[in-house]
Image (cartoon, rainbow, N blue to C red):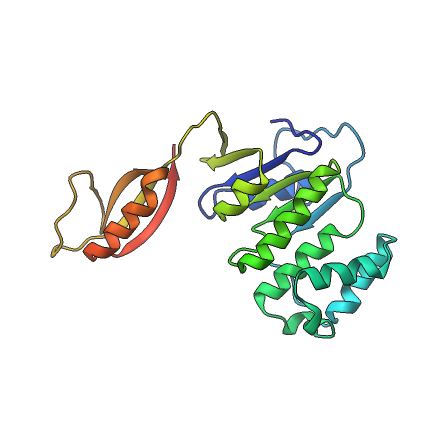
Length: 238
């Protein structure tokens, strides 16, 4: 797999498939057990972890500290704080912030200063539309300046509006979704003898499973819910 300047790639797949691990390997945060990663030039990374740590420091002091390290004026930090609707929390300790607000701080710290590659692990998952609008705008601005973006994500809107390529990870291997290729999903429901099983359902212990095309997934889930089935999981399947 090769990565290019200004390219944006999304990694998708079920929980535990290795998306976060792949981002950490690329950033050099964990060691490879095999293979190698070649950098053709010195790379400066910005990294947004899935769970940004709450610390005993105010939002302002933390981001100003990052700005000092990156030799960036405080006005850039103030602009990010306004854009992400965090002005009222500027003096709040990080450990006192909600999960959503802490996620925004994690994004801002990665955007401060000059980076070659931005790594985003589930950025702004579950955030409101206004915050996602700002995020999409900021990331596309970076892409316009030649920054490469790698993102682990479940948010379909972010994938559609931010990425050039989408890869899924299955059984430790990368598969590229391109040329109109459509993923198949495994949908699992709890067995219920009072409901009539669909012809395409197969038994898996105390569950039933059916395979669904991506374009039909939403409609299928709604139908299952309306019939009274209890959904227990959805997995990408190749």
